[in-house]
Length: 126
Image 1 (cartoon, one colour):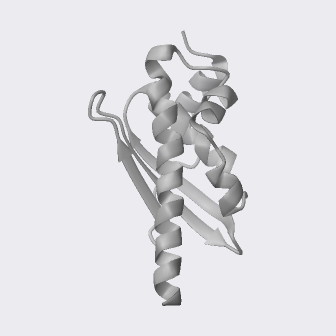
Image 2 (spheres, rainbow, N blue to C red):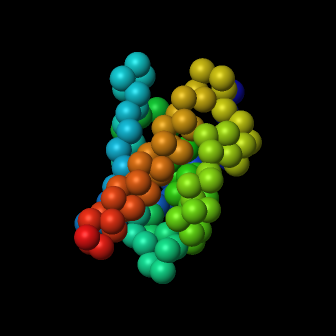
C-alpha cells in the first residue's frame, strides 16, 4: 500500500519540532480526516535555513510533512514556493489515491509558512 520511502519517512521523520523564533509559520488542516500540520521556517538571505514541522495525523501526513521539509531546506523562497502537491507525492514514490490529500496539506502548509514570512517582512519594511 505504501512505498518504502513513505514508510521510512513515517518511521524516522526528519525535521520534527518547532522553531521558537520562526520567521514564518503555516498551519493547515483537513476537517474531513482530522490531519493538522504546522510548518515553521527560518530564513536567511532569502533561503530557508531551517525548517521544522509538527503534524497530528496519519502516517502519510507525517511522511509528507517530513518529505516537504527535506525538499524545501536550503532552497530560496521562490524555489520553495514552486514545490507542488504532486512533487511531494512523487518524491515519496507515490501515495495511495485515498491519501493524496496528505501531500496537498504538506505543500499547502509550506506555502502558508512562506506567505506568513512575506507578510512579516512587508510589515517590517513599512
